[in-house]
Length: 287
Image (cartoon, rainbow, N blue to C red; front, side, top):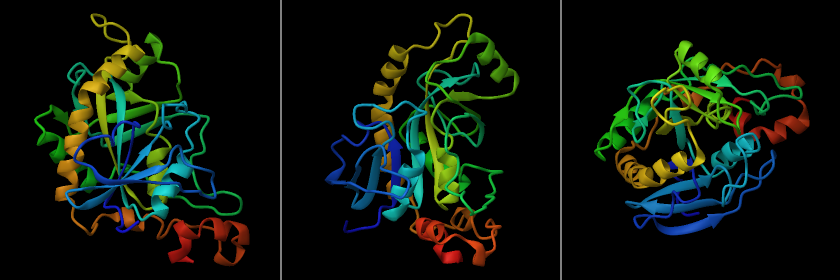
């Protein structure tokens, strides 16, 4: 790898298949948490290095619960990625967020229950701040990049992440609306919190594919609906990524880069040797 990637993109396996991406190479990365979902594809956009990872594997072979989120984030961190944009499908829980539109959320609600949510355990206690889980600086840049494509994009909203792989019942969907949720998906958690633990800026470009199942005058969500909108929006996502990499500043000024500064509670002398080696990439600068 000749250059440190200016951006990591997690999304579908077809996302990186566009003409503007040059000098593509596959990198197989192994991590202490297992192997990531797919090889990392690194290419150049406007002369800048960008890394792509297929969240569900090449050919979409992992359910949302089966994705090895820890390995995915660790692998991107290990090649120097310090900003991640997630490209994902979502259902709308609001009348004004319509299918075909894009949402850059600013809050998240984790309603999953089967996933490994942290890199830290086995004698290492870390409490990371998550009050503002999406990096505001990166999210503003992503919003502007999407806006410049001409697409309709919203710069706020709360993303509820459900376990899946099934879609919601009407009772569940209506309850999420009562809670004030804006969009619904299956993959943002724990990905976003692991990125914070890795001190990586994280933003989501959520493509609204449907109205979930709450809308009385619209058909309930189906896989066909999701795929149809995602395919139509792939070009928007690709153009937005091109726009983004040309505008991203080299240096970060947000607090994401020091998220672990005061987060480690375990006394340094008591950190298990095995854990210290496993977590050196994440904690090394503080130990």
